[in-house]
Length: 169
Image (cartoon, rainbow, N blue to C red; front, side, top):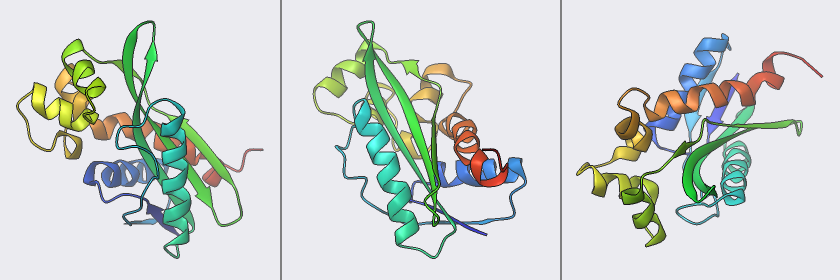
């Protein structure tokens, strides 16, 4: 079986590999760079659209059996800005499923930069004097010091994939 992911981000690729290993799916993972066709920093529903677009485009541009899209985004709740990710999985027969990660509040220092037009990864790099946080720990890693971005994605990848390996109606 061949599984494609619509991103060249190493954290997303490793999260898919880890999820596939955990569920015992005999699959090779390939990555392809695609445009999610949403703003650089998706808000709310745009995050679902971006993940779905990534999944379908990765399927279309490869010979894979399953396409996966992961899109990080933000949404507002109770006057706080929350970060989260959406994972979409699709196959060539039209089966599709999605899940999303744990969400977490963002501190004012990051929130203010996002409202100034920065993407979460860039805002995280500025606040924590880091480089390439979205390819490594991510905002969640810097904020919690325990959970990294890969870990944040593994469970929703597993949850999005269950219809493809568990044969449940």
